[in-house]
Image (cartoon, rainbow over all chains, first blue to last red; front, side, top):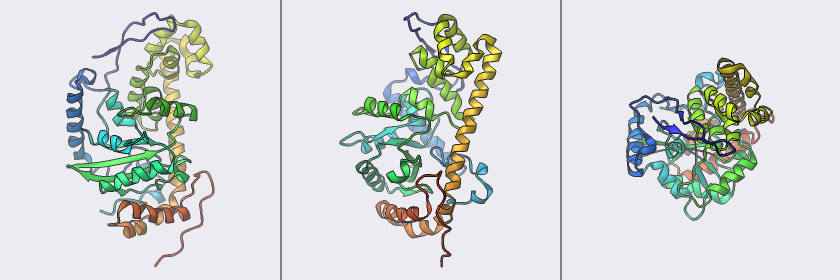
Length: 84
Length: 272
């Protein structure tokens, strides 16, 4: 688990705070990986994440269409869909 | 090397045109590896947009349904989206020039700070603004980004942790009071842990609702353009990206309002 040390405006250190564990304990300690290790894990993640491509084929991760299509107005849900 | 670092490097060949953002920037900040798509903030100038399009064309990218990569739309907050395959990966690349909830002053500061950096990527204060989306899954990241901030004023403004805020307020009571003027949820500090947690959750849900309303505006404004998309895709199929881009521009000029808050253009004509 990583600790973050903040300081007050007068420079007095604040007690280290524990990070929320939104990742599981088995997850990587990214802060302590070497640059090369980070690149390897990053690439491995990207390859493993391809397994969900069929599930998000018509979804957007970013930008102005990032609402799930199920939340788009009914008459618009099919616009621009993949033509698979 | 990650494809997203490779692309950032190619976009920025010769000068800084693109700042890697969102999930891939979160990797570079060493918080989490959790996103398979890439997005960038671009400079809003013609040379940048042409360079990025040419780079994407060299990877065989195609447009997804979106606004064209053109400053007329981007300056009103639209985003442009592309996809290509490389080395077994489906690579999605998303672009905008006006990130949501980021002021022009903050954006100028980001460009100044990242100019010449390799890789150029968003710093926590701007990134947490961008991640304040309608999606639940972005908010733990917002909380962790806030913990990277070093100025206690920024912590008061952005922390998602009631415990962190109460600890900081105990050490900085005057600053806590001052910052309440800038973040109304902090008025719940005297109510203790439960009261502050509730105030932070109300604040979060309000931000999520605002983001959803913003996105609904764009989706609705794209309706008429959307009805032409299948035809457009058919015509663009197999074309190099630059040619497809010119075709998409023709359609967008007719059917996609540059400013989503303005009245949409007329209905598309019946097509044969």
